Figure 1 (cartoon, rainbow, N blue to C red):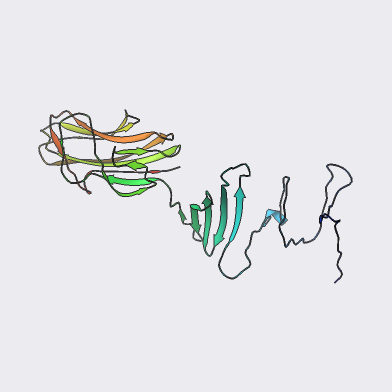
Figure 2: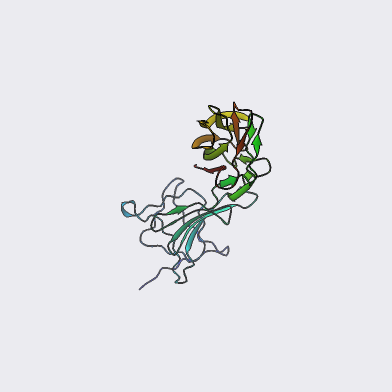
Length: 249
């Protein structure tokens, strides 16, 4: 098989130019680059029938995976994103190494850093005498990103988006025909009633409901309880009064 060898000048460069500015330079057949190829202008890559226009592949057999790197050249922090595949998992890694999203061959998608929490009251069955009263969720089962603060009982939104919240609220000791309600507060103001119940004699009374809320970064969400009764008690413990939520998107 014959070959054509092109030798550059003493600078080490080989220049391929068209005769006029704006003209096209076409290279037919298959082109193999064994070193690093730098494209400084816009590039359009297309394949036959628009399939396989660009293939990024690691041909080794060590399951190291094949990855594509996307970087903001103006970023002083040197941040970049990886999109790649290793075995049967496809990854999208943000901020250099954090896994933002991954999915399997079966199409199962996970986002391990997606903000979510599950908070609850400790034991003690506090007596409510002031209306409204913020429910003290001071413990968590999980708290991805630590966006729920167990000191002030607030969830603080890390990013703009739609968030889904769920509250289970149980009380006892209400007088007959007395009501209690659960209300979501956003940034210290009432946002909406999440649950309402009216007592019919003694015993426990429970509300359980959810609410979708649009939040901006640093908005905070709290849960309050209130009643027209002068005194009643919340059933504390992990099973009775809990508050959970997550970022939908």
